[in-house]
Image (cartoon, rainbow, N blue to C red; front, side):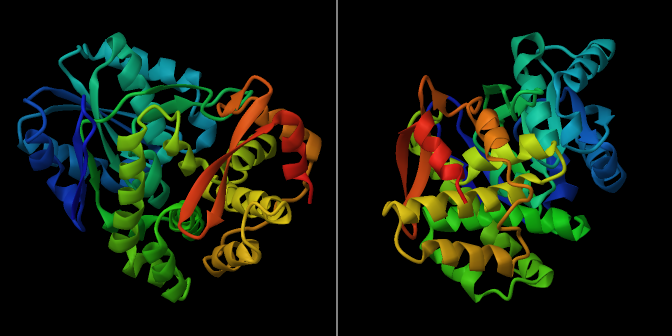
Amino acid sequence: MKLMVNLPDRPYEIWIERGAIAQTGQWLAQLWKPQKVAIITDNHVRDLYEAAVKASLEATGFDVITFEFLEGEASKNLTTVNKVYEFLVKHDMTRSDGILALGGGVVGDLAGYVASTYMRGIHFVQVPTSLTAQVDSSIGGKTGVNTPYAKNMVGTFTQPDGVLIDPNTLNTLGERELIEGMGEVVKYGLIDDVELWQELAEMDGSVASILEHAESIIYHSCNVKRKLVVEDELDNGVRLYLNFGHTIGHAIEATAGYGQVMHGEAVAIGMVQIARVAERKGLMPVGITQQIIDMCAKFGLPTDHMPWDKEALYKALIHDKKARGTSIKTVIVPELGRAAINQISLDEMKEYLEK
């Protein structure tokens, strides 16, 4: 399956196919001339896939080097970025060379940020290996790293030259890592794709069912994101729909300590909380909060977070990138399959943190 992200200045293709990772070299040879390629990955993914990807790249004429860092959200910071810069300089990477991000969302965000800033920008591609990265972070050109103040506070908008998605890589994910990706998938059904929501409703919620339906749920999710990115590349309008659950979710991640609550888990909790209050205010339909709770619970996603420290969460979310002056843009779902922006004051945002 293929999807085209038809951006006017930098169109690129998303290729979704089981077994595609073994064809990385042939795929990249269609995008780039022979050059030096720096694979950026983490220690866990390197053990699983780096050798096969490197061999495939070298077989098609690329000169390959590999940088690995310690897996986990705690590594997604400027300290790691500086280590990558030093590695690239040491290996004489130039503006004619490229980066391949091999891994989950942490790898993709960090590698994309490095590529967009090293020598004022070199090209890169995404080869995501986690469900969260395959359906969300590898597409759309958002790069970034965390600071002690907020998640993804430092970053750029820079599109990749292509995205290769092999659903078979999900077979090597831990159960928690696979399930957390369903937080983003559930979100896509809620905001834009009733057909996807119905498919999720028909699944039994098991790991086996996620793996069986992987191609379809990845395709549907990527298609929603592709459409919104093409319409609003720089996140000023409808692309904000993708942030349903994220404003509160990012605050949960930050206050819990990065890595303690995984991204998709935080999104699920954030969707439930924003829906609960929006439904109470008459902004979302009666009963939709329970629908979200039931769907998340079926797939093993958390729907609450303890301890719930309202003041700490509020302090974290006022640093969110969606905050503008004294207001913040939140996302609601007025009906299943349709999202809307709900701009509120920061003071009113406190109400959305009430249990």
